[in-house]
Length: 326
Length: 309
Image 1 (cartoon, one colour):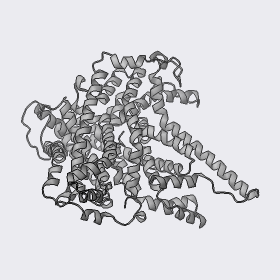
Image 2 (image 1 turned 180 degrees about the horizontal axis):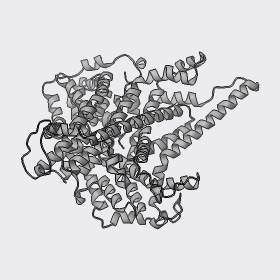
Image 3 (image 1 turned 180 degrees about the vertical axis):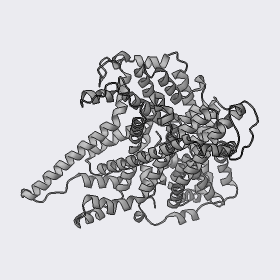
């Protein structure tokens, strides 16, 4: 369930015009000015983050400039080799294949998830109570399902010999999917992967957008309706501008999560994909570093990935800071 | 906020009162509206079916005898109902076994939640109830740390844990998990603490309580629901985490449930899907239950986050 990891729900900014007066000055005026107490309170969390995130991050940079392979794991000294690891990575077509594949996969997933999630959210606003609750229950089930079990269950449904998908396509739709292997062909492998990821991610997008939709004042919609705006026009001219910041933040979160995807791809490869043709960035780092023991090269790929992701996340961080008074 | 959403949905779901009826134009409009609502409801049913089907399929497969699911027919409901698959999962003498993995998962997850909650709670008090120099930079650091991709960090996390002899130990995985859930936990708790007005505490202090007393008697009880929700969220994350567990806990007796499930699936992938589905069900049920329990509160937080001024 990649959509669960690190989703700060409160960081989602609302539509600007809807905001009340800023209550913060009064609250902060009442804050204590105390010497050491806050620092003492921060010590435990800071120590953990320094030890488990800070130190490995420094190590990651160091390893990426070292020759660090199997020999070094068993105690041989690790010589510094400058930018050699980076040159090796950046001139390796396999790396670029993975990069392009990851980006394409991410774009497709984000687009499908965002469009699907928004449509479901719009649908939710127009349903009666019974059907809205029914749909919400289904979405919650999909949202709650752990990413790994979800992948394994979908893998079973798409099973070559006994899967329900092949059975249904063959017997109910008259297509010849008898003993069809879905995972052997990279394109159809990624189709299944996309299905799993979009299925798991739509609920988050749908509920978030729905929460935003309920914030749009009814009067504005009614006024637009009276002025003769069609529903597509209303979406483009009112809904979208209102939800702009929600859309942006949710899209960025989806981009980050889909670029980082590991569990679904790794588990699906275990069920029957061809590694070389289906690895994405996260899986590739794992294979190079822990699979082949090339920690130096894996480190270089990881550093490139960290910078790449941080550049994308920057907007999200800025937006969170702007929307929440600190 | 929940009231607002309710009133909106009510006004949208109940048709506007019809002052007059019978004119042909009006009845065509009514018919079209009727038709539209049927189409929309049908779409909702399709979305429901698509979302819920895999969960249903997992559970119903897990109650079928394995020889029946590998026949030429597919049963959409167990023809013969059996608990055999659960017995297989629980008591199989595989290389990696379910019960030890369950134990590891429980210990690591509970330790993670408790430690992360305490540490995050202290930190969130510091950043909400005090003004000090590096307050903003701490919050900024939390946000940035949360964005560092763990997939990239495994390279050095593995090396560092190896140096400290923490590979294949409960302590090692717990330490990594605490760091993973801390940023989110601090960020969320910060929101909950902010939601309790300082004025309440100050009023209690005027009435003669010490600051610590005011905090424990007034603020803490109001925070309890937020702590529970955040804790459950951390539980779900730690329970489901796969990659770090795969990297840190490679020895069969140290595996957590996700690593066990994947090992079990690779070992039985072509032969015993029914048992794999039983294992998947056992691993998912606690998460689904917890998720349904906190979902209201989390969605509420999400919505109040969206309207908070």
